[in-house]
Image (cartoon, rainbow over all chains, first blue to last red):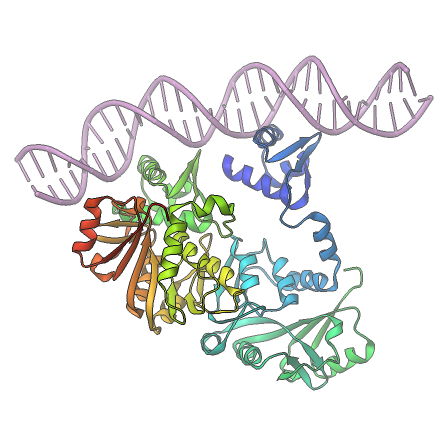
Length: 253
Length: 253
DNA sequence: ACCGGAATCAATCAACTTCAGTCATATTCA
DNA sequence: TGAATATGACTGAAGTTGATTGATTCCGGT
């Protein structure tokens, strides 16, 4: 590996974890201890990191402080996100709907080799930096606040698409089916369902029993549903009886 | 292989991967080490890449360019941005190309009532929150690092578009016409030109005399050009003789 | 407080890679 | 054809790497 590239990687690792030991770095980079040692010395010299005995620590304010990150990682949504990301095989093409839960899925996709298609601006921002992910953006009228591309252009593009899997979110789920908040969004999501072989829905348990404004689709359109452990027995039966493969995430994530 | 073609390919590889080693390039291009070395030296010279030991790295606009405001506002690009924004009448629809100068234009569009069409992720981020701006996103393969949607999907969408004005950037401008860094980008920009009644080009004076690799279009395709005051008399004549309306921004902004 | 073992460190060196410069040959353009 | 430019091979110089050494620091037990 080349000098600059390696130092970049070291910097990223340290930024990500706050602290990394020298041995860890040696393992991950495949370089010798001497080399890593020299790199750390250099990075410390230019003030990018702070050298400590046995490793190196991050200096300067992080964009997302570590405590905040820890808090976030504990949420149900994040657990769902991680679990779903692990279910997706390398090299696959997935269609990612907008929404906070799907955004969590996207967070855990970083580092995987994938092709991701999305109409969500936040997800695009997150994955655009990732060199292992090929990102296809769906265009359209950018809906304020949620930052999702909708409208005729988005619908038309989605209509011509064909992917093995779509991962969708839902505003509300009842025995009648899935609901979401506005009709433009629902229209796009219908195209997504048509475009995909398998429809995966991610939702935290609070969504169940809630019927948001606009009807999206029946439960039978869904292939698989990934939910946190807060879902009661009654709902589990409803979902499974509709022929949906139900995956409940363990409470301890 | 032709010189320009090879350099274009090098540039594309570096833009896509962020970093490419010299040996990799030798392998992929089938040219000798000396030649690749010289190409890298040249590209480094014109500021398109950053040469590092053993390879070359991407330089240029990052996806999240957060420079200090007071530093930024003094730059020529910011002056051009403000001037162009003022030239655009309320209520219009404009097509905005990617690039650092067009991003500056976008910054000064906030608060105006407009419809903006763009394929640039940074610009979309900037304008997505603005309630007075209706934002249409052009989809496509999201080109890493620059965050611009390109490729067949973007080309197709742009091909079906019709707007009164496009505001474009250029990597280089000579008496022969406009140039930009890579062929995917140029292909999209050609569609933009076709889609628009008027073609406005924003460029700081350092771009003149530089022919950056891929030919985009002749000067006569341009309706109007907005440049900072650093442009010398000779170039002004060249531009005006080509039938382009030239607007030079005052030195004091 | 003191000791001994383990981990970490800085310094050094030889092997290796990359570099800038030179030169002869090949290609392009007028 | 001749001049200008581009290319590929070569070379000594400079930079990088991994292994080794002995010194230093840390830590648990007495």
